[in-house]
Image (cartoon, rainbow, N blue to C red; front, side):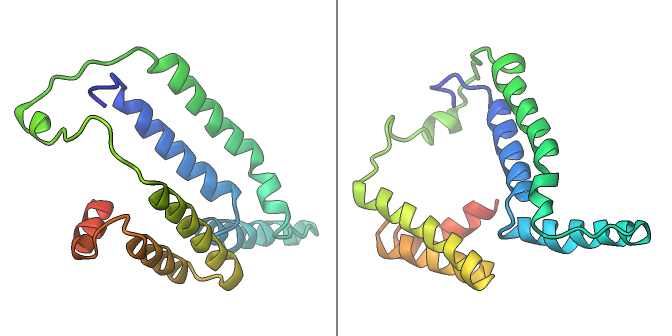
Length: 161
């Protein structure tokens, strides 16, 4: 980010908004838990004395307006609030860990990444199993050589930190 002169707050806003928007709008993975097991159940409990019934198909449509507000806030953060280039001071540790200027991405790795993502999503939708999708996606990435099998512990611990 230092070389790109990118404000880190923009990245934080993009990540937070995209994760929140996907959970509130897409009924798969954690979004399915939120929409179907939390929001739908509570909406039906409130609507039953009034004679209203809410279905699972209504939930994404109902959440579209709040998600549009989240996306509008993200656009304002990107293009208005944090639009200026930002210069950060380069510490000795950051300069040491800077690594190569341009990472090398092989076509096989890129294809394997897309296949892993598609497999993970398919498992979530077909089997309603988030863990199975994550495991299969991880195995596809490992088999394609996106990361070394001997470094798998670092992939998990750095991904969770």
